[in-house]
Every structure is written in C-alpha cells, then in structure tokens.
Length: 477
Image (cartoon, rainbow, N blue to C red; front, side, top):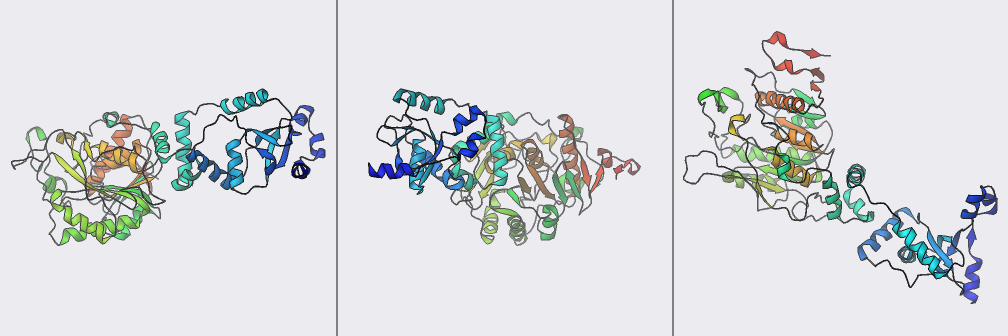
C-alpha cells in the first residue's frame, strides 16, 4: 500500500490555469488527462484483443520512432491501481522501452461493464481504408522514405504493402492487351533526328546516342539515378528474320533501307566489350538495389553473363522466358518460340538486404506467355510487346520512378512506363528509330486523348516536324 501511495503522489495533471481557461465542455474532458507512473497501471485480464508478434513489434517500433502519441484509457480500481481499458498492447511496448510515465485518459471509478463497453466502442469504431487512396498514400510515402524504413513501423508486411500498391494498378497481363493500338506508323523517308538530339516527351527523355559512351548516358540522366533497367541490346546474330521486303509493302529491310546505323553483327571480341561498357554505364546511373532485365539471344548468354560478372552485378542463372503465341518463320528444324531475359541486381533474386526491392506478388513465375506483336506492325526488328515491360515495371518499380532503357528500339519501354505512371529515360543509337519512337508516342497520346508536349533540345516541336518537304518543319520557341 505504501508503494501505491508513493506512486499516486507522482500523478501529474494539466495545470489548472490551462484547464480553467477552456470552455466548460472541453474543461470536463481535458481535466481527466493525466501523467500516471507506469507502475500504477495494470493490464485488463478481460482484454479481448489477440496477441500478434508482428503487430507488437511494429507498435514498439512506432513508439520508438514517434513517442507515445496515442493515449491509454484507464479506470481506477479499489486497490488504487489503474486498469488499462484501451491500450494494453501499448502498455507492454512502453514498459519494454523503459517509460516511467504514461499519458492516460482517466475515466475514474467506472464499472467493469462500462469499461468493457468503452473498449469495444474505442477499438471497433473505425473506418475501412479506401484501397485506392491508401495505395496512393503508399506511393507518395515511397518517394520520401526507403521501403525498409516504412516496413519497420507500418502495420503491413511487405507482401501486404505490395498487394495494396498493386490494387490500384492493372493486375493481369490480360488487362494490358488493348491499351495501345498496334503502332502502325507511316515512316519518314529520311530521319529527322540527328545524333546528340535529346527529346523530352511529357517528362520522358530520349537521347539519340551511344549507350557505351559514359558522356551520352550522363547527358540522358542529367544527374538523376534510375530505379530499374529494362533493356534489349542488339542480339548480335545478324538478324534476318524480317530482312526482306514483301508484297503490298509489308515487311522491312532492316539493315539497308531502314537503319544503316543498326549493326547486329559485331565480332566475337567486340560484342562482350560492347555489353560490358553499356552495363557499366547502366550500373553507374542506377540506384544500388535496382533490378536489371536484359533480353538476349541464347547463343550470346555467355557474353552477357561475362558482362554482368565484370560489373559485379548479381544475376539469376535461370532466365525469364518469354513464350510467344507463334514462332517466327525460320530455316531450322525447331523454330524458336521463346526469348530469354537475364534478371539480376543486388537483392533482386531473393530479396535479401535492407534496400531490396520487390513490388510484385509472392508467386510470380519466370515463364511469361505473351503474344508477340504482328510483324506487319513492327517498327524495330526485335520489338517487344508492351506486356513484358509492364510486368517487369510492376514487379520492380513504383510510380514516378525512373526506368532506364539503353536500347530503346521501338519505344515499348517508354509507352509502358507512361501507362504505369513511371518515367522512361532511354537511349537509341539509330536516328530513324528515334523518329519512330516519338511518332509512336504521339499516336499513343492522340489515340488516348492524352495531352502531350514534345521538346527537341529544349524547344517545343509539333508532329509536323517529321513531315516532308523540309519547309513544313514547325518549331515553337
């Protein structure tokens, strides 16, 4: 009893001068807030809230970060102790953290049934979260706080966090099918783009340059770091699948007619060095835990692995496999119906490390069944369907983050990034492909009634810039 008396003397209240200055209704309420020694508080043996190890740890981390910002509710017992009506798990956390005083709302000597009713009213009168609004808050928070920091205090596991993030986005490959019409675009006779030209497309950036040159990549990035690499370098197989003109003007003569700068036949000595340089430039312009998706020809996997290892980039030895609905025409007995993608990055394979990133589900697989675009509509010889980039972006990036593509090709990465509210920074070596990427973006925006602004080297241009003859060029200051 002596101990209780001593502790009771230590109870502190809001000063009377403050209380008396309040209106009568508020005065009655705030007079009951007290600072009570923690040793005077006892847990309610009737508390109906289940124990949860994960939530208890999150609560403890929350208090450690923010302090006791939520009060406990108590009632006074005949023994002189105060029973916790609401906040029993909070009391446990406060004791573990060594608190001597607890801020409480004292209901006085109310009955047990009154206390139990208050507990239910307080705990259960809560509104459900709007999944979309919660997801949007998460996305905003993710821009300001590292994921590992959020996971320490928010009452969601990483899996729950990602499920909520994904709830406001497209959730299945089938949903991707029709958001862009097939990019049938009339090609300019001669490319308007010149090497060194930099386009800005609603915040996306496209440089006509060389991904093996550090200065070109630096110009593209403008001091920023990307969060994901999704890219499709030349396969170095002397690509000829569509290298023939066909009747009705369909098909492309890629090397001669369309893209004299696009060479897919480097020597066995040149190609590994080419990959090593481009990956080095990518790594230098990516965040530490960025994921890497690099498409490749099976025959050149050793060269790509060598490039990853030279740049000390971890990789999964089992590739992602894109299975097409139909195999391209070939002159071998077994037609190739798939293409592989080497996946890697620090923490990418198993999610280890505090900064590891994964925003997809728990059971994604490495075989992706996705229809290839009809080759009549190809604007690049190794054009990838949008669903591939969309899937990678959903799993390995968040909204408003930068996706880097050092071989932008047909621009699929840019269109997918725009659709998922990511930002694409891309390099394309061939001027004509740059023209086609810009025209594809314009067509995509116009088909979707989406406003767009195109800048070339800092000046606004219209789509008429790509028309001929040259006197139709329009540039706005």
